[in-house]
Length: 429
Image (cartoon, rainbow, N blue to C red; front, side):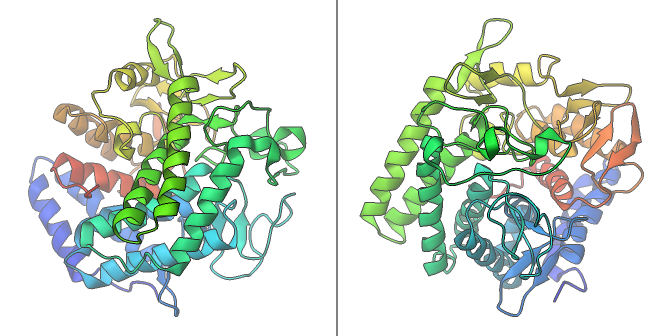
C-alpha cells in the first residue's frame, strides 16, 4: 500500500514550518509543504512483507542512494511517530536485502520483473534495474540504519540481513582496493560514453592507493579516474558508524578490527593521494584520482560531492582544505559551475551545459554557517521552480522554466532539508 493521505505527524510538522516561515517566507512554506507531502504520497510503497519500496520519481525503480535521501528528513518525526519509524525501518530492510542480492547494483525493481537495463553487459538478474557500481550505493543504507538508531534508539534493523549485507559491503570495498582483481565489469551498447566503462568494462587503469575503486559517480555517469574521493570520504564516515554498531550493539570484535583496518587504509589514501593544488596554489581535495598521476579538479551536483564533505560528517565546515576546495568548486575553475541571468551553481555531466541542480544548491546552503546565504539560496530555489512548487533535477540558469525531470523526489527532499536547516531543525548524526 501507498500513503493515501498525509500522516497527522507530518501535517503538524508542516504547520510548524509554515508558522516559522511566516509572511516573510510564505513561498518557502508553500514549496516545503508540496515537497514534503509529495514524497510520501507518490513514491513510498509499503509491501506485504513489512518492507518499504521507494520510487525515485519518474523512473519506476528504487535507487539505494535516492531512497535514503528521500526519507532522511522524516527522521526528525520518527521518534514520536511509530508508523514513520516502521516505514523507515522497512526501507532499511529492503535496502539490505538488495545488497545481499548484489552489492554491485545501484538500482532495483519492486519485484523480479526483468525491468530496466537487462541488455547491459554485466551480471544482471530480473531484480536489478541497473548494475552501475557506485561506492555511495553501499554507504547510504548504512547511513540510514545508523541515523534511524540515533534518532529513535531503534536497533531491530541490525538483524541477520543487515549483518550479511555489511559483510558483502566490506568484501566489495576490500576487493576494489585492488581493482585489477575484481570480478566486476560493465559495458553498455550506447553512444553516450558516460554510460559505459572503457577497457572492456574494467574502467581506466588505476594504481594502489588504499582507497576503494568506483565505476560510476552518484550521477550514474562513469568515473574518469577510478578513485572517487568524495565517495571514499563517505565510506570513511559510514565505516565509523559500523565500528560503533559492532562495538556497542552487535558486539563483534573481529569485525571491528576488519572495519578499522579498511577505514584506516581509505583515510590514509585520501590524505596521501586525494589532494592536489588549485590554480592559486592552495591545497584542495581532488574529485577523482587514479593513483598514477591522473587528477580531476571539479565537483558534481550529486551527493556525495566534495561540497558535501561537512554534511556527510567527513570534515568540519571550517576545515582549511575544505574551504580552499569550496572556493574552487563555486568558481569557474570547476567545469560544472555555471552562472547566468537567474542563478549560479553547480551542474553535472548528466545534464546539459548551463543547467544547475537544486540538490547542489541545497548542499551549498547546508554547508555554510552564513544564514543570509541560506536565505539567498532558498529564495533562489523557490524562484526557479518553474512554477511547479517542486524541485527538479536541473534547470537552465538563463531560463528556470527549462528544466529536467518533472518528478524527482531526491531534489524535493533536499529542499525540505535546507528549509529545516535554516530553522535549526536537523537530523541527529
